[in-house]
Image (cartoon, rainbow, N blue to C red; front, top):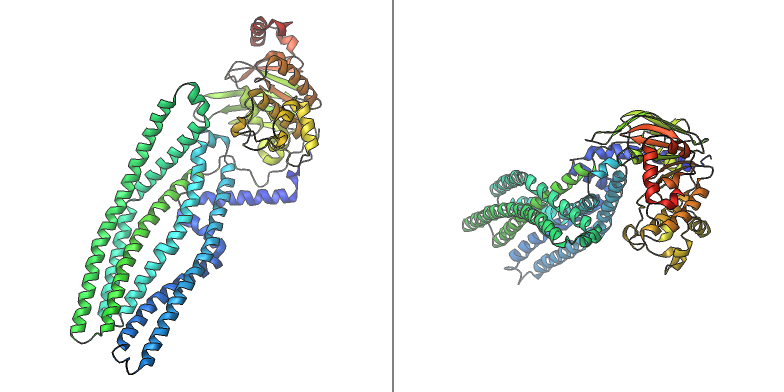
Length: 610
């Protein structure tokens, strides 16, 4: 059977090239949160540029309005005889106030679009990069931890942009503008304010950076708690079955206590910074006002100058406080973002090469050439496995648990790389072909069928999303699940629940078989495909599988040897090596592992033996 996959098209190759290039670029941002933020902000330079200009103009109007108040105060003594001076100062003040408010609304309108778009781009890229990791990456991490880190990254970037736009940038501009405006009263006072403000900002920067470890520790603990909660919620049936609610409560309580303690240390460090800053700015404000009064008493400052300096002094006081608060919060969010990037953006273990050609399956042959394999940190599972499977041949893999049967199926799907040797399909090394075209050539019915929290239609047609309802129903009929599908309240539109929780084990297994039937791939992988079925259902499903297997190359793992009796060949594995091969009848007569297993099962199930 020849596959007609779209994975060899020019558009697919261009997509794979873009994906590869993007993955390579994203991996460089691990531990570089600020550079990562700039990557997405730079995509919308115009929007962010206009936003910054609007904020700068708004702050300028706010500062100018304080100067306008100073002019109004100075105009009041002579205003009874020259009302035009007061009216002019009043009009200027009103215009500045209106412009100030209008500019803030423009900035808010732009941010509502730009900031949301940045977080959307980030989450999309992070999911795409996460999906490119090898299965070994997911085996070591909880799904809840990974999903929470993507959400945490998006939230951190959104919070950072908002904090910069509304909490950090305006008071920073206010401080700079206020210091400059003080020069209208006293240049020495301006120079002193500039020096003190710079020293204060630098001191806060140094102290805040020393708290990064505390903030990162809190981020790690928060992600760990999220992972634990998702893990327990996803296995609540198991928890109740073993009356482990109290134990899980105690476990979660311990994790929450650790996270709470980490958060407390992080927040208390921030409060110490805020206290130090409050004392420093209070002293600075008092000294500034006293200096202005001395200038007034010497006749070098007007009453309006006192009002202006007082107003600017409080602006500097509150502005520097807001900058300090914003900065330490920014430091905290940057630390969380950095921790998440180091987890998600680690280099992908099995990246697809840009030169990967699509798999062309003319004859669905399979070859294992001296394949060795070991899971990370574990003993070897396969040792020098050599196996040739002809096109259209049905081969069963048997052996005791841990012999390497399921590992062979995973290697065939290129979920892992062999540590030595190579695997070929139709004479092509699967490590060198486009992954999409490889998956198009394979259909698998696993022991534990995975289902999404979606409709039955979406789950069955997952490998062929363009399939018609008629094709889906025919697949259901072949998989002996049409009766229960029609009996469901909404038929194919029924939501199956989390991991198919609304279906029984046997129903999930039949849905998995229907999905494989609909995929219509030249190579069929069966991993205990009838393990969850009762004897009556197994007989019906076996007939469906016999029909499905016609004209296809089949590799099946089975503990029930009765399901392999119509196979062309049985391959027996022991400790990662092939120890026996032959037809079921030949192996049943030959001393060895297969005959021992067959004898034991025949004694337990005399009906099968008959």
